[in-house]
Image (cartoon, rainbow, N blue to C red; front, side, top):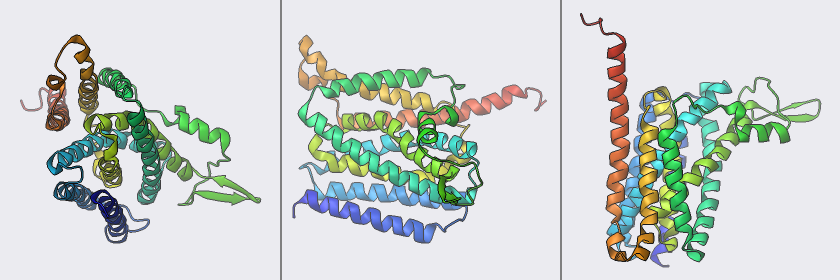
Length: 331
């Protein structure tokens, strides 16, 4: 058994046991997860992800354990930061469909498991494309720059509307649905016919909408880990980030309006990554290819800095806004 096979086995075992622990001890069916428990669960998934990073470094899978570990943690933090943007969309969906808080945990889990299946398929396809067509990295780079610029300039008023979303329209068109109170059920049978409830619609929407996020995030991960033979690093960083979404949702759902500039921070990250993927094109202008290579730790620093600065600026700006709205309060 080589090191790559061992890593796959360890990763699968860790995810399986962690899910059992999370669902069996940290969560209870039809129980609302408190802020304290959400913080505990989030810490659990983050620490587990960093522990797996240590395993990657120790096993020296690709011949350079330190570089592999930095690539893994950079990809994980990138996916984790992009996941925060997903959370705010999830909050809007749950609010729109009036999902009861005791159903949040189960619905999120089902949606996230769907998302993992889609991510695995996207990564497998992306790895194959990169291996066969090296020039596709430039296509990814242009796409990420375009997406980042668009995200940076997107107005706050352009809020996600579930009723106008393509996934919702697709479900309503092809499935028999009902507006009846689901009472925790995904389907309801009436007069011999099965109807899909709003909870089922939410599960499917969570999974399908993740496809849109994956279209941004998967190319970005390939900029961090360009070697298609390192699929294990891409799979593990993605899946650990997605698995942490459920606890992150409970931790951040009350802060959906407090990170106004997070989107701009993510936009800057995507533009940086896109430009990084396009840098090799400059070799055709006579620039030495070695000078165009940016160490992976640079990406890690940029990702962490952009996310932290955007969050801190959002908090500072919000505080300044409250003070400006009440200038005479301290007189």
